[in-house]
Image (tube, rainbow, N blue to C red; front, side):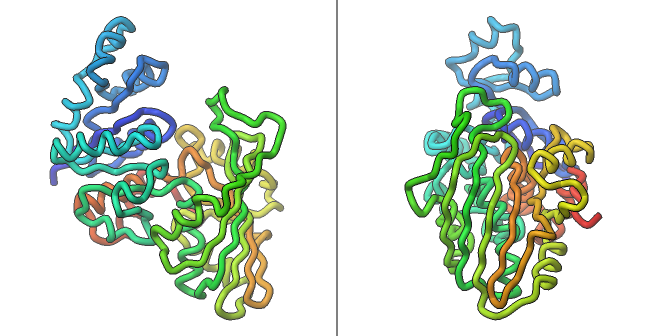
Length: 340
């Protein structure tokens, strides 16, 4: 079977990870990646063997920097079956018009509004909704994290209400521009966008979200409180988490008490870029009291959406009908194993 030809528009935090993940799949190939400026990431992309495509206005910049380009962004659109758009948020509408003109499919990221595509994607919650679609959108890192844990709980024990407080990282590790440096900054626009984003995939869920930006670059942390339709036992929730795709249970007794140790664990697993694709839940922090459930989960904002993008390609390009089989194939290639 011929491999699906994939382009990555934007080789930044998410784009470079998606490019590597796609290149590791047996049924896909990366035709090229794009950069607007000849930064160190552009040089790294070339060193990794990815063909560089640039906006027409940037061609001379790359020549002056000694970076060979394979063509323009428009040229890349003519060579691929699907584009994974990892450009900064709120520019998707511009590129969507270009993808439409080229007659190709495209995946957008959570920085864009759901209205851009009308379809939002999560591998296990609604894989088939993107089947054969021209455009879809992989939801944000925090939304992906919530869907991975709330959706399986809702399937087994209906969630009446979900209350989530998100402690957000202030910046990614490589970002020296953003803050706060020594403060906690509450999000005063309530509810935050995370709840509505979850509802783009689980529209029946009554969810309320708040967020606080913290002085860390490592991960996000969620404090989750759920009111269920009926009483449950802690062990039942633990078992759901244990059997859920891309959810990793850990215990504080193992020495993983903070997000710092979670990221150190990812390094020990030998992950590419030390990425933790799974949503990490503290097993000894799960508690059920009557019909109320409480737990904490950590989200690696740089990587948890990466396997979702791979699965979304398979759904949109009609490569694999069963979500579970696509997830298994992606996880095998990326070395994701949450059951041991």
